[in-house]
Image (cartoon, rainbow, N blue to C red; front, side, top):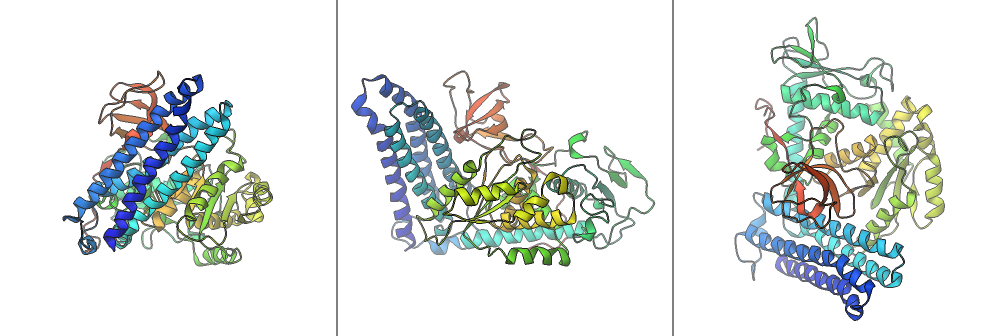
Length: 551
């Protein structure tokens, strides 16, 4: 049974590749003498090369699956071989890479052919090709989404993710509740940063990572907090049950020596001598475990910090639960976060509602290939109540969940109030429980929702779409990608790449290319995203061996 499923997946993926190649290239054969055909040939030559690369990665994936079983798959039920130890790092990396590069192929084909449509060159033919490629892209992704369930490791991933998360939470609890508070070394975090809740939450995360890396108990000073004058502890459970004071010890501003008993931290934006353990670094002692169940370890690690600090008190949680119950929230559902007001025009570009909804449409069209969908549900969170009205008017075939009252409290002039905070916490909770998140990662709230998704499931790295920035942590150290394939620049906008080159990334253009600086040549330009992979930064964080460990 197991083998027959794999045969079907293999055959389907190979057939889809052949059909896509034929449909993209064949319309050009009959018009080889025209200028339009010549232009097509040049543009689609690169498409064909990417399809060939996808085919090779698919072949590598099947080969890796066979190797991981340790035996020849032919005629043998391999399910028994997958119950111990989990998948190899190479297998997990390749599986995610095939999925990611299928999307990158679509970004490229869609971008290039859409330009031809806009130029009104053989519009009908190009549109037909684009629609057919989109249909086959959905089929490819749908098949690939089944791989984690068919490969025999699904339960292992769920269990391992829970075990590693539990280990991190126990370490944090151990750090935050020292046996002798008076004698413990400490770090002070002042919650007086003049920004919104998402930004302040990330400030606490930065402080907690600093505390974890330096083995200091975090003391959170939050009196006069703009969301509640009485402080963080009146809304959330305290981050320590036993240690909340620095007593009369001398407080030293960072940078400070190891011997300083109490250190006060500046904002991450202005920190000098920036430590290497700041995001996007992850603990080296846990890295080999995290990468085997999660495709974005840096955001998973930050999600664990959020999981520890973001624990609403009973009264706050009750208010959140009551409003959730009224919404009839259930899966499948897509979460959409539309940030307007103060962000647009200053920190981020304006994005029309249809830009978000096209990803919602693609999600449900793909989902319908594998299951029946009773309703196309969308949870829409926004700081502009007019967006909710627009969505319900323009998309009547979708069930739009959302609360205009919450949106109104999120408006700039009403944002810093207990009522607004409860609405925001509800939005974050529900967005993080959606099957797909469509947002802008230029927004702190959008990134927090994604980090919370990473904390409440084994792997949410493919469950979020950003319309602008790739994921980042404000004030982070360099974000690099490494070239996994060589590349010869096709024009003056692109960079030459050699295997192993480090590229300092500025962003993904969502058209098959990203922008960055090749650190070998120090040149800046475009790089084909599928020829690169994230460079994971490991740091030797303390291992807290005195904290209880899992088996």
